[in-house]
Structure formats: C-alpha cells, structure tokens
Image 1 (tube, one colour):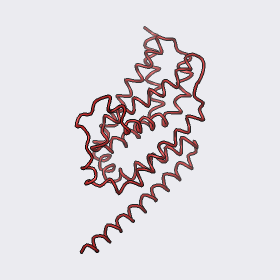
Image 2 (cartoon, one colour):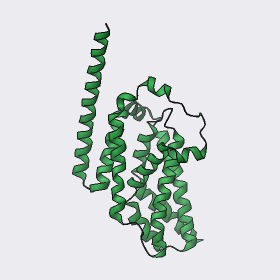
Image 3 (cartoon, helix red, strand yellow):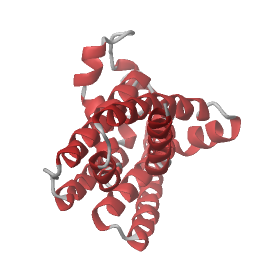
Image 4 (cartoon, one colour):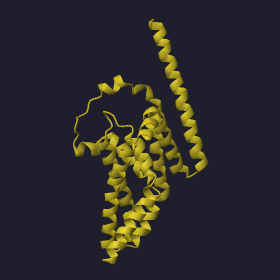
Length: 236
C-alpha cells in the first residue's frame, strides 16, 4: 500500500514540476479555436506529443537513452516555424476566409489524430517538454514495473486535467478579453520565443525574439491597415 501511495505522489509531483509551463501554452492554443482548429485537435495533439516524450524516456527504464538531447532540442524549430507562419498569414485569417473553410462538425478521433493541426500541437508539446526527458529517464530507471505503470497512469490522467484547466482559463473574463484582443499577435510571438528558448536555452535571446517578433507583427498590422485604407479610398 505504501508503494502505491509513493508512486501516486511521485507521479503527481513529477508531472506538475515538469509541465507547469504547459498550462500557459495550452491556454494560448485554446484561445485560437476556430472552425478549422478545434479543441479535439489540441487534446489529441497534447496526448500524442506527451506519448512521444514517454516513449523517448522509457529506454531509461531499460538503462539507456535512444535519442540524444541535442537532437531533441532541434525540435524547437517547429514552434518557430509555426509562429512565423502564423504572423505572415495573419491577413488571410479574416472572417470571410474562415467561413469558407469546411470541416465536419464532429470530426472522428482518428481524423483528429492524423490532421495537420494535431501534428502541429504534438510537435509543440514534444518540443516544449524535451527537457522533461532528463527528469523522466532517471525517474523511470529507479522505478519498479508496477510503480512505473502507476506513474504513467497518473501522467496520462493529468494531461487531460491540464487540458481541461487550460480550456476553462480561456473563459475567465480578464484572460478571455486579453486573448480575444491580442491573441492573434501574442500567440505567434510566444511560440517563436518558446522555440528560441528550446534551441538555445538562453533567456536573453528568448526575450529578444519575443519582443522583435511582436514589433514585426505590429509593422505587419500597420501595413495591412494602411493597404486596406488605400483600397477603400480608391473604391470611393
């Protein structure tokens, strides 16, 4: 009985300590839900990315590590690519364009897992959690099989709890208003900063990348607004 309690406590503590920052990322992702990017994509992608982290860490249970840490760090390029793509395509995200997108109202579980949106979320989850592997490998290596199964059960249960908590956070008035007004600009900048931090592990470069990408997004917004005003004048 004491071993079970110890395994449960270890699982909760290890998951909370290594995934507390995921709440922020998940909240930002849930704030971007629309007709082509649904909560199911985020849930499936988060589970898929976390499963990848577990698979990469499980060799620690057998005494080894398959994927070098430096290779995993390169996955930080994925959030950078997604963030830059979102910034450059902001003008294409007008309501009219979104209305033209069609997707089944209730996409199947299989469709959610194989969709590009899910893969993007999974890549972000895996890249953001790459440092977790250094914690999970020794944790798994020092666990008996029954304790390991309990810890993994706790881990995967808490992934759902994390997603639910992040989803509910988007409905808090202060957070909802901020994300509604600034989400399209703020989220890509955070993704770029996250990718820079994963690749370089340098806080200064991360801060500079977030600030510079935000300034870049403001310039894009100004140019887009100027172009639309010119088009209105010409039409008149």
